Length: 395
Ligand SMILES: [Zn+2]
Image (tube, rainbow, N blue to C red):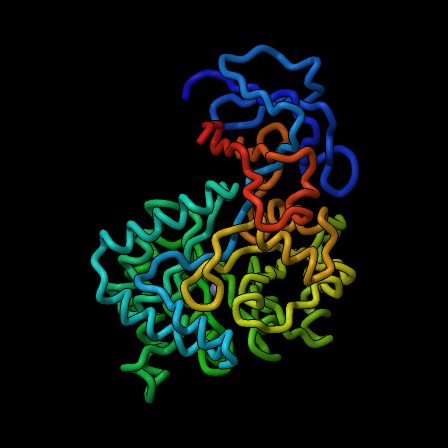
């Protein structure tokens, strides 16, 4: 779309910048967009003219959701495993290998269609930025193609060759770590921005995780990791040690983990350098206790919310659902949850051009079918996303 775009008659604009309260709210506002960027935010009555026009009709507008944790490159589903879990079987992460088998057997086109389907699903629910991980190939060729396909859809791509040790390496995990750090990383790095490890009992221990993440860092990738999901462990502290942008899950945190995260606080009071990304869809879908978001927030740790969209432990692409869970189950206020799902996700990706609606930001806007962001938690399960504008283009 060429020319400028004005979104006006916004009853409640969430800017995550200057304005009322923690969300920087402005009332009766308008946003002017040029060349994919926000260039002006102000009172609707004083809005400049533009080539194109969207009338928000008094509704709420917020920054597009930033989903900083998703596993979209896979084949098959695990509905039967979900049903068994709901009938009482515990989640162990072992089902990942089922998806690895299906993913290896799939064609590029099948994988591509799944990524596009899920990305489209998320976009319709207001997600304008979505991180995508590999991690169901676990061979040099399958990890490289997973990332190549992911990179067609997102610039936020993450190499997760260390998701689990594949069955063929079950009795020689050191050899698998060598493969991940060597030829697999070399093949994956051209398509990846980040490296991630599932640091958990039954997946990768702290020494293997440190070795893999250090190799990724040396190859120019940023660090993020899955940590402290299924039980207590050293993952979060490893993340802090390696200056991870985000440690994800954080369901079981010790006082030492809390201190480590809080210790990454920026001196200007703008939160922590390492973000705690909470993934309540996983606790919902595995019927597990939720992370203690209040404890993190009260300690000054920056919190993000993401879907963890994957076929095993959290098959949802809905950020509004995660916001509702965060409010109802993790005692976050609606404002904290909406911030975590937008600006928080941006922090988890070390981005300052998304998750905010201030001049200079990318023009990613969501128009709600509601007068306030409060409705995202107040009306769970209801399709409240009326319109999505991504990069300045109405979708
Ligand atoms: Zn995950």
